[in-house]
Image (cartoon, rainbow, N blue to C red; front, side):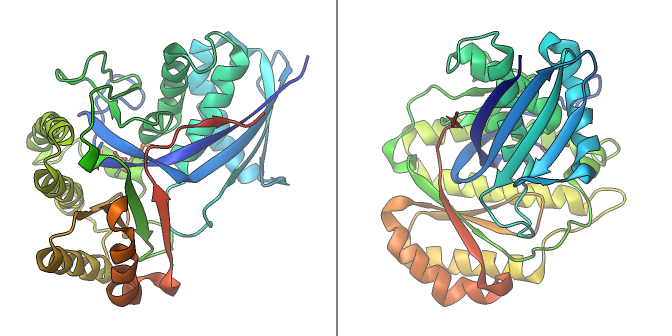
Length: 342
Ligand code: DP6
């Protein structure tokens, strides 16, 4: 019998970054990472599963067939297959859409694989939908698509990778951080300032692999583990200034690792730097709680407490938009959870 399900899954932004993989598995992180989900930047995916003794796939984007995406998704299903009889015994039709425009440089893989993983965990029916085990299974599947995607299935800050300070943390899936977050670090927002909307010169997957012979890799992994312990403390205590310093340092370390890879590369653009400088000046002048972070690209994620939204939007318009491609930026709340839509 055919089964149909539809999920919405948010994207996420890492505060402490995953950059580098361990040997001996698929997407096992070299260090733990933590992220906020981005509730207003999401993928919606419908999955139709038909019993079959061969896993076949039809992939559509917004109702239009996209055969060029099929090898990547089939590869994902092949990685899941050893863990799921359900995947082995079905063919799939998948129709997905992102609510953010294509060609903004915003990675769609976290939301996309997150949504796919939720559909599969739901359809295979092994765990009660909405239970901890259910989300853990979805996170496990999502990781096999793209590492950072495994953090997208939780509303709470998600930690992925073994860490002594986080109970039940694992390299195989992300877990929600259950500690109490101080109110000064709840309800932050993220405005993504689109500096470059082109294809990335180096994919994340290729970037990760350059950590293999990287002269500073071990030091970076150690520092990231330490930063996880520290950021969790800052978030619980409401130590906003140290939180901001750590988050910005993480973004710069990520890009420093790219610049010191062999061969080296850069993803930040002049506009990225100009925006960072403006943010530092603005913070010095106003003392307001804003910070930037970067993912593997030129765009700047401007993080701020929702209480100062008006000042921040004004700041974006007066100082930052000149550095945004086509004046484009996209804002999201943090901390949204996935939704089952049908
Ligand atoms: C810089 O998850 O995209 O965004 O596991 O190879 O698919 P793969 O890589 P990916 O790497 C994302 C790296 C990052 C930092 C982060 O999200 O933690």
